[in-house]
Amino acid sequence: MTNTPKVVVVNKFTPSYRNLNYNYPSQKAVYNSTMNMFDYFADVKKKAFFMLDYFQGKIGKDKEMNIMFENGEYATQEQIEQRKKQYAKYIENSNIDKLVISFPEGYLEQSVDIQKFEKALAKHIIPMFLKKCGYADIKNMSYQFALHTDQDNLHFHLSFAEKKPNYKSYGKKLQYRNAGLLSQKELAFLKNEVEHYIEKEKVFTPLLTKTNKEIEELKKYFNPKDKNFLLKDKEDILLEEKIVKLGEMISEKRVYEEQKIKYNSIKDKEIKKLTNEIKKYLFLTKESELKEDYKNFKSSLNEINNYFIKIAESNNIKEVDNSLIKSKEKYLNNYVLNAIVNHAYYKNKKITENDVIQEIVYKEYKRSKSKSKLSIVTNYLSNASRNLQFKNRYQIRQAVKNINDELEDAQRDFEKLFQSDKEYS
Image (tube, rainbow, N blue to C red):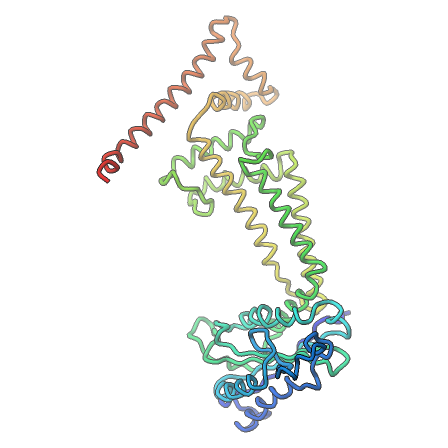
């Protein structure tokens, strides 16, 4: 059982002089069909009687006809005559594709502002459709359409032609499209885009707004300036050790230390593997509010996907475009991975006492996971002799101080290399 489609698209074409067929056996037949097309589109008896311009008395008095060109404006009779002359040239080599886009009675006028829809059709929907059909440059396409109300259900008449060779064919140079009818896949794309525009304000736009807010909330967990920053959780021994290890690995591979690291530019497989392990641990294993927020985000993406599935099913289309969902997932994924590698790297640039203690704790933790972090530190720093207890603490502090002093000395020596150049300049 199939659904009654909300958008129906019918396709015909008038062949070019080079592609004459039994329906159009002569150039004269092609010419007459093309010229009559403009008169039929602009027929005042078929115009949209409820349009604001009609009620204001604009159509007719200001010489605007019921036909729109690429700019989304109603054309004058003079502009139509000029376009006829252009098409007299185009039809020598270009087929004239003709489509009718129709809707169930009452659906279009009850769902959208028709004038806004016409603008969207002219400036966004038709250009996307022509790109989908394989035309390289929209500027080299000519198209026009008209809304007719002479039947119970509203419908648009649309036609287009190539101004010059503009069709991409299997990687070869541009040529005129010789094929007659458009494919069902191409027509399905147009139907989906039209219905998506009509339905989006009611369902899609609120969903998209919600999803974008959820992405911003998830980003806070990976922003060092935010209180929810997860990567600096000293209580999580396993996470901290992985981050320290990642920082060491990245530092060994880095060349331009002042540049922000981009995860996608990293070539080392081990670094990428460890980065993804950290990400997986945060989203799937570690208990935090992040897991619940991420679950909500995935649920919203699923709602968006269901929305597109519903539109496709209403038009009896099997293939569903999920590129938007993939782009949202990719954006969040890249943000998280970039945050992890940069935090790990800059954390590794200068050590603290806590870093040394963390290393001690981690090694002890691997030996006996029953011990708490507090007990491990207490046992390590404690000793029968109070002198030795403070000696351990002193040794840690002194070791850290020595290492950091060496890093600062090395940095000063490095800066000296450029001092003579600065004085010279």
